Structure formats: structure tokens, C-alpha cells
Amino acid sequence: MNVRSDRWGRNLPPVRYLLVFWLFVLSAVAYLDRTNISIAGVHIGREFAVDNVHLGWVFSAFLLGYASFQIPVGLLARRLGPRLVLGLGFAWCSLFAVLMALVPLKVHGALLILALVRFGLGAGEAAMYPAASQFVERWFPVCERGKANGLIFAGIGIGAGLTPPLVTAIILRYEWRASFWFSALACAVAGLVWYLAARDTPEEHPLVGDEEKALITQNRNMRTSPNPSGGATQSGKSAVPWAKIFGSKAVLALTASYFAFGYVVWLFYTWFYIYMAQARGLNLKASAFFTMWPFIAMTIGCLGGGVLSDWLATRFSLRIGRCLLPALSLAVAAVLLVIGSGTRNPAAAAVILACSAGVIFIAQSIFWAVTADIAGEHVGVVSGLMNMGGQAGGVCTASLTPLIAAHFGWQMSFVTAAAIAALGAAAWIAINPIGIGANPMPAQE
Figure 1 (cartoon, rainbow, N blue to C red):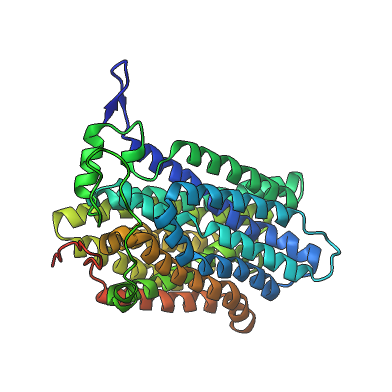
Figure 2 (tube, rainbow, N blue to C red):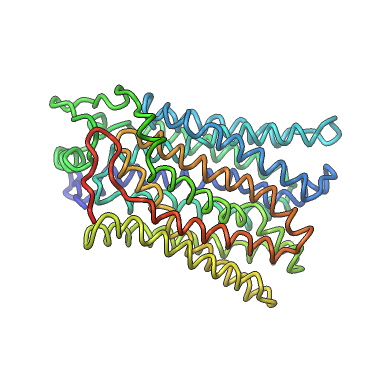
């Protein structure tokens, strides 16, 4: 990693890592914003007389909005740039967090209003990862994309992990609506800082030195070449190869595997807190405590997975680094889901299930690194398509989990997730990080 020096001779981190650190913060805020309802859901259900099945509809509404706007936002990130798209996206999320706090108690059709507000929030949050993926493709050489995505997606574990104790404390001191006011403020501040600090390409940023700029532009494998004068590149001007994207076995298999990934992880985001409270008989504070564990494990798994993927890709081949590791992580996670859900002791079950979450999150940053490897300039579109599959998995788990639990028990909900994770692992057989753009990366067998 190259370093800069200030006028006093002190070493400074490269600009690309300062900006990707703020994407980590944005990622954490985004998951605080989207998962606070899993904690507040107990109180919302009680206040609006909504059972778990109907509450699952509200959870699914967010994911439908999120999934529906993945490809459009990917196109916007490519055309308008990740700086503007993320800035506007977080302003939109702040607005809808406020609207969630303002839903009146005795309004007619409260369930529909809650679902529509969550759909709108999902549409705004759709900007987060396609735009971040576009940023990584433009700002990072291929050999650093695993680490960069690992840091970004580690924000998921931090944000989702801090949500249970933080939102629980806010609810106990005030009430559930206050947690959404807090989310609105966090989104507004984080988005504003990003817009002021970021630029769409390293060529446009005044703080990027010649050494860092040369390292990025010579190794990022973009479709277009940087402007020799040091100005902005013309990224986003060429046509999207839709036929290549939808005809690529790698893209379709990646989307299918991310569906499985999304099904499993959204089980933790939406139902784990309620599972620990209802199925394991824990009180509010104990449920919040145990609910933190999977997200701490996710953070560790995500950071470790990104670093390990880059090392394996450099030491052996791109396919080993990008494909073997996520396939193993989904397979092992499936086994741990079965074991953990069948364990009688609540603490032991929480530990094993947390390990499952951590293991599957080894694959998280790799999914997104692979999209940059195979799509180049079109990563915003391809990652949006992949993420749409992941959120479709989330929609399914948000709605199916309470139904399966009601008819067959909570353990069967986790066993179902395990079976889907195993299928997601098998999908990696069809994935090879060979480019679909004009300047594809060479295959490395």
C-alpha cells in the first residue's frame, strides 16, 4: 500500500483507503437503518396489533423496494458516478426513516402504510452497494479489491451488531419511534460527509498524488483509459452489453448463489432477535445481547475473507481466490445452521449460529470482488443484478421463516436455510472470473 506524506513529513494513508473507510461507515449506517425494525418490530407489532406473519410482509416490503432498484441504481452509478448517487441515496433514506417515525397509531390501513414506507426506504438503500462497487472498480487495482470490499462489507456486521443494544437502549429510554429519528440523523450526516469528501475517479480528486494515481489507473482494468491530462475518465459512456451480461453463466450462477446467501443472512437480520426471544425464551436485554454475536462474527468473517481471497488469488489463481473460498464458506455455514438450531442450550445455540453467520460472511466481499473482476466498467449493473438476487432471497426468508416456524417449528426454518445455502455453494462450480467487457481479464486456471 503506497503512502502519502503531509507537509511535516508524516505518513498519510492513500486517499482510496480513506474513502473506502467512509464507505465502511456508510455501510454500517445503512444496516443500522434497515435492521432497527427487527428490534422495534416487537413493539410495532404490539402497538399496531400485527402478528409475525404480517410483520414479515413489512420486512419483505423493504427488500422488494431494495431489489427492484438494484439495476436502475447500478446504471445511475455508472452514468452519474458513485459520489452523487450515494449522497442522494442517503438523503432519501433519511427522509423515509422520518416517515417511519411519523406513522400514526390509529390510522386506517396502518399495515399498508408501514409496508409502503419500508418499500420507499428499500428503494433509497438500493444505492449503497452497486455504487460502492462502482467506486471500488474505479479506485482500486484488481489485487486490492477483496480487501476494499471486505472493509466496506465489514460495516454490515458493525452496523447490524450495534443495532440490537443501541436500538434497545433507545426504545427502553424513549420509545420505538425515537430509534427511527436516530437513524434519520445518522443517514443525513454520513451521506453529507461522503458527498463533500468523495470524487467519482482518482483523476478528479485533488488529494490523490501521482504515485497513487498511476498505481490505480495502470491496474484497475477499466474499459476506458484515463485522460492523459489527468482529468476525469469517460467511464459510463459506452453501451451496456446486456446480451453478454444475461447470457453469462458466471453472472447467472453468481446471482443464484447470492440468492442463497441473502436467504441465510436475512434470517439473522430480520428474525434472529425474535427467534431468541420467542423460541429460546429470553428477555429483551438477553435477546439483544445474544443477537450481537452473529454480527460480530460477520465483521470478522468479512474482513478475513477479503484479505484471504486477495492472497489466494495472488498466490495461486484468480479462480481459486475468488471461487473456492466462497463455495466452502456457504457449505460449512449450512452444516452449522443445522447443528446450531438443534442445540438445546440457548447460549450454545447462539454461539454456533453466530459462527454460521461469520463463516458465510467470508464469502460476502468475494461476491462483490468477482463482479468487478468479470464486469469491469459495467460492475454497477452486474453487481446490481447479483444483489437483486440476494434481496429476493431476503424477501423469501422474511416471509417464509414465520410461516415455516408456525407450521413446523423454528428449527425447520434454519434447516431450510441450510439446504438453500448448500445449493448456493454448488452454484460456484459454474463461476469463473473471466471478463465480459471489452477488456476481460485473462482466465487463470
